[in-house]
Image (cartoon, helix red, strand yellow):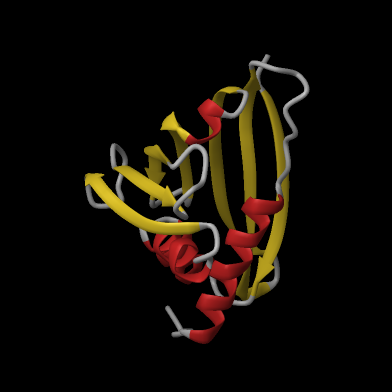
Length: 156
């Protein structure tokens, strides 16, 4: 049975500007760069960040599993929605038969220079005792928000 867990964060830039990170390869690059205790390397195996892109993310040496491959199934620059799925390694070797994420960026009503980023983990468990947490997703979304504030440019 497919299940979901979601969370939302506020980001103090426009949705258009936030999408330049959340909707691109930059999100994975920031995660790998800012979390060296968890990730060691990112390789783009196919694509440029649009739908169909496949990335391979390597955990730090000694981690089990050592890496995962992720497919960007949907990257919609109009609706500001990105859907990705782990296609090999990672969560699929840790009790999940399916593991994906959906990111949605929306303008905050009444605030031109603010947006809401909703992250959803979509998963199916092989083993019901496998713990499911949004903590890792929250960390990555917040790292990207911090990056956006630090590198803020007004997009009109």
